[in-house]
Length: 166
Image (tube, rainbow, N blue to C red; front, side, top):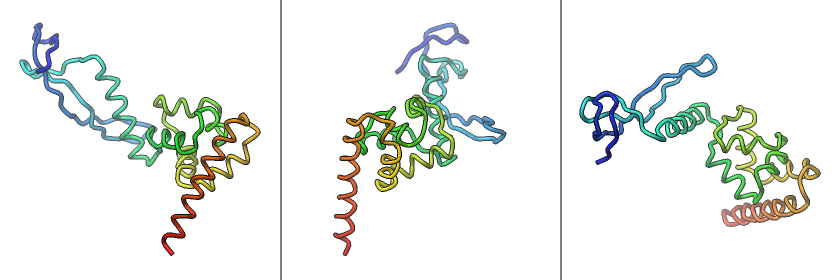
């Protein structure tokens, strides 16, 4: 059992984590989110736990992205991995400011336009390659070369996949 100090009971007590619905208005639109709350097993009151606020911020962020069909942090990390590129160079290749990807990975929510660009790059090596060629002068030659090799490998996989279907 987990123990903490309950400010209502004024003693060390056990608690239970529960999901609770919360309504929040974002950009003039009401959303319903499921957040985690800690409830004292003695008095039934909510109690504060270290790290719970941060967890709920992440839960709300994730649920909001899902409701608005925005790219997830996990998908942005996949984008970095499959194209073997750093956060700054990826942002520049996609036509964003250099720190934009870092901000998104830190929890800032992207606009629908930027989200769609990242999703398109994730789904299409050809699209990413086009953006890479358009913006190659904005990144180092080493970053360009590594990412170009990753794109070429992905494109080969797509060609092999198409041939196997025939």
